[in-house]
Amino acid sequence: MNGFENQDKFDEKLNKNTKKINPPKEQILSQAFQFHSQGNISEAAKYYQYFINQGFEDYRVFSNYGVILVSFGKLKEAVFCYRKAIKLNPDFADAHFNLGNLMRNLGKLKEAEISYLKAIEINPNFANAHSNLGNALRDLGNLHQAEVSFRKAIEINPNNAIFHSNLGGILKDFGKLKEAELSCLKAIEINPNYAKAYFSISNLKYSDKNKMWRDNLFSKSILTNKSRQDHIDIYFARANVLHKEKNYNDSSKYLELANKLKLSIRPSKPEIILNKSKTLLSESEKIKTTEKNNIKFPQSIFIVGMFRSGSTLLESILSMNNSVDDLGEIPILEKSFLESKKINQSLSLAKNYWTKIKELNKKSDITTNKNLFNYQYTGIIAEEIPNAKIIHCFRNPLDNILSIFRAHFAIGNEYSSSLVDTAKVYLDQEAVMTEYKNRFRSKIYDLNYDSLVSNPEKEIKDLITWLGWKWEDRYLSPHLNSRSVLTRSNVQVRYPINSKSIGSWKNYKKMLKPAIEIITKNNKYSDPKY
Image (cartoon, rainbow, N blue to C red; front, top):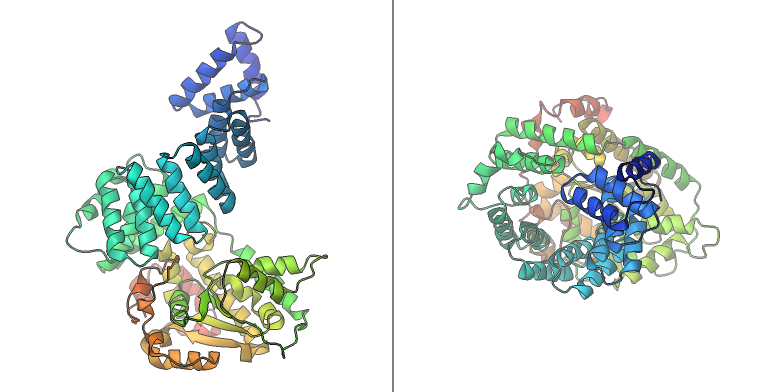
């Protein structure tokens, strides 16, 4: 295993400096640990690699070196080191914990869960393992067990700001907003410099009684010795606070700082999205319906469109129906499609998709799938999944682009940090959906967010009629829905339907100029007064 290109030269130099052909194992080990503890990572890494090259084996070396390799982006090598450490000492909890962290970062959530559980089995008082297990469980959608894990971490170590902040996040998902605020405040009390807690509380409709944290958020010292990610969280938090205070000029300044910094870490690549749309559009033209329509099939509802277009509100409305299982943003349609294209695959796309739903222990015959990028699959859905209903959510493009730019999405939506690229993606989804509506008009419902929040009773009744459902008044009160919500709309959806966000783009008109220039080139939006 090679860690550095110049490792051979380093090995020769080390042998020369120690005046021995092979320095003692203990000497190498001691020097490596010393460099590591001093924060001299590059030298520590060289000593760890030299130790390994000499054929020495020590579980601490492989575990420590794995951590360093992760920081260098050498993930495969890190996996090898962690597994080697575990092989050398199966009862070394840290190695299982480190492997769990890496598996979660790689998106292998079940493997991460297994590693965290093993670390906890070895050391039941491993607070960080309980907390990170909670994060993995949250990612897996197991929110109740995630809450248990976060609370256990706090029980073991009540003075850890991260644990309280994590608990606040899960409480927000459950709609327990007051409790979430208290958890965030506790995190800030423990560590007044913990950036993530400020971002979390800035997303809440926080109380005016305790806003001492606001002064600290805007202090110069809070940015001292912070990582780029911390700067991003602080800038977004400041933007959120200023937005609520209607100081839109300064909010714009921090939004631009935050998103510029995000792009420097993870560049936007909208061409991947645009090219995929073209590919799937072409793919849909080759498909002919294979399933017979005279057989009773489950009702599969697909909510598609842009992020921040009212899709979470819509899912909350539909899931007021007790016969509906909401799947959230799970990517099982794409997985089913890719599997159905394999040469030896016996299941059709539809049957593969329904099988995956059953594997999630969803028992209802009506499901909602809110993976918004399914708009790219609309033609394939319409052709291959019988009894599918597709609801296209859309809103004023500039309100939509602004909301996306303010959202601070996690990894995977890098285009959201570029106003230009977000405008391009918006127009792409509109063009793609227009094409699909021309071909499958009866299977696609248009849901205008602005109309929905301005006249909810009419719009919701029309939608329920189109779905063929019986009307119930509770559809008008989605804020009373007790379901968990994992999207960026997990706070807004807990309040009654309102039209406050309509026209918000006008407050940020100067900042949005790059997007306006692109959007107004489209004939539909050529009038800037739309």
